[in-house]
Length: 163
Image (cartoon, rainbow, N blue to C red; front, top):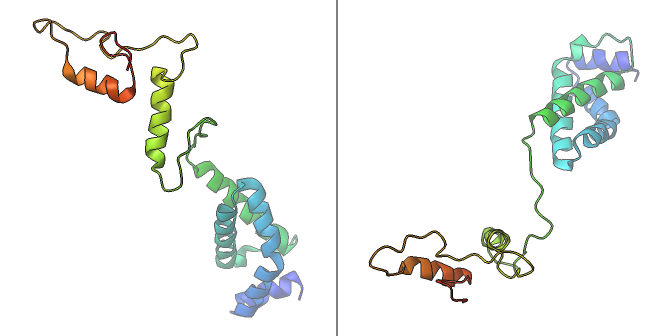
């Protein structure tokens, strides 16, 4: 069936004609969406949305070009629209410590950040941080015990003593 005949059949309510159009063009539409979006799931969604839009607006097809090209323009516009709606994402650092299966990934990430921030395990020229640095010890000369506990938990020097 030629493009004009297919469009006329769809406009007359022939659902099989639209099914034929989908079967004929679905691979090309999906591939175009995938090239733009780079994510198979997004490409599938946009391809499906494109066919729905094509069905709703098939009466606007003028016939001055191939039906596949008309459909492809709908799909690429939809894909670029979806691409513009994406939220920016950040790549995870390559040295992010990964835990054992079943471990808490958030805890592993926080442990890695803590190591990078305070220099635990990195004695090559980095300043060792002291939990007591900058802490007011003016309460009768006594240390703050909570600072010692935190320092011990982090494996830091506490009050000038290495833990």
